[in-house]
Length: 117
Image: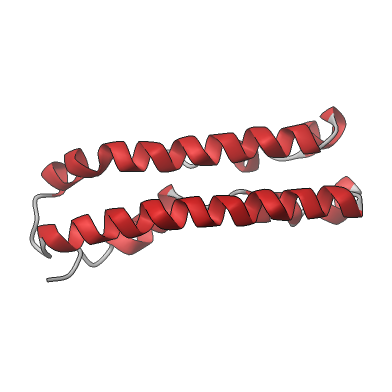
């Protein structure tokens, strides 16, 4: 059995790591080497944490099968997805502590706000 075809893409969007986007502004924010290293460590840690959530969610969706009821599947996955979003929020809070208030303020809101459900 496999997961619904667009499920992996949706999962990647829901559990997207926002830290690489912050690192993409390294020049305009004038990040120090130490800030880049700290942000990369946060990103790596978040990748590992969300990979566990993603693997768990993917396994559950595969068990449900290709023609599973999306609403029922989401109900089963809701808590795991919430855990992934919580981890993303914590990573963003850690990133905010690494940046100066001025640097944080210069980031676009779309980068500072976790992806919607």
